[in-house]
Image (cartoon, rainbow, N blue to C red; front, side, top):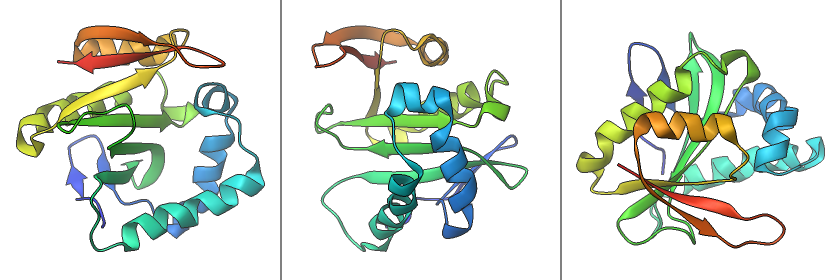
Length: 166
């Protein structure tokens, strides 16, 4: 099922499309993205976008899984997912995101996160994040949202925080 199109003055969240394949791969191959989201090859990424599009094609699912492109001036500036995961409870959604290097440190992700925060009541879901403790930029953006509490989750090869956002 396609996620809703959400428009603000500074960005649009809408379903990522096949036309975005090249900028999506560029974004995913970025060294910072690879460091914090996992290393993937270009060949693996060539196959990942069709998987995203297959999720859209499902009419119904027992799982919440919205996948958006973050667009600024019609350019793919980032990638965002809100989904049920092994980290979430029934009333929670995990947010996962990556931002194109050109849009880092511009306040874009903070704006997107604050927009998502405003939707929690409407969606009847609390949004959580999982973040590696060394990912200072992401932690900084989440702190602007407001962190209620952090739990360390033991995981091999690297532990991470489960962050409960306000």
